[in-house]
Length: 246
Picture 1 (cartoon, one colour):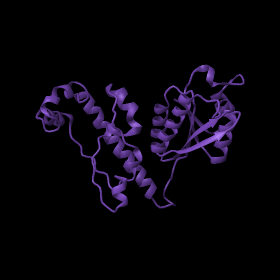
Picture 2 (cartoon, one colour; picture 1 turned 90 degrees about the vertical axis):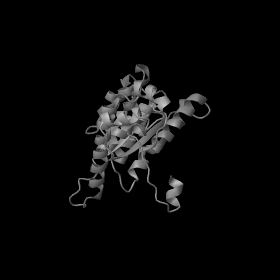
Picture 3 (cartoon, helix red, strand yellow; picture 1 turned 30 degrees about the vertical axis):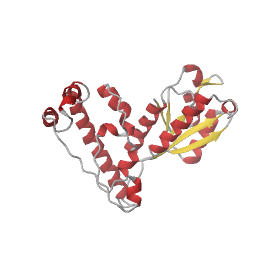
Picture 4 (tube, one colour; picture 1 turned 60 degrees about the horizontal axis):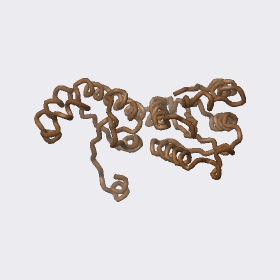
């Protein structure tokens, strides 16, 4: 699609709300289905015009049963799994909410400087090599950022124990994939080198005027720094900054 736009060709496309990258975990928790086909939220935000095509769950089920969406041989399986009446109703509610959020952000961005409240802060998410579910952490951050109309940073602190000659290849691959995912979701990726993770994060927060810090909840041992929990250290040094533990 980006190639078409760069070539000066207008693009009209449709997308279902369950394919938004930042909603992946929410959709999975809600429906029990892992959606494999996903797209970066930034593609939606770049659209010149967004139209929500709303259809009651009952009408959509009728179209499915009539074979107007999937081949008839797939209808029974589809209705018994993802496209249940309950799931469709929830997805419809999610679509309405997302559309409202997008329009609200655009209104705020397009308002006159003297009347606009602007962004409500800057967000930093701390990326750890030992995080249990970095994808969920990034998506939660992206949802927070969307609500705040804020800019966000994905910050990874490389300590001496994770230098290129010491770090395990699998761990390095996970970090790289996590940072690439953050970039696709619209985050600015920052990689720092420091012996002390907490001090590196604190310095970054103060320098960049971060208002919200997002941390994952890894194993208890990995949270401790010199006898203190990482989030305790951040709270002690960053008065006035909101700390969100995922």
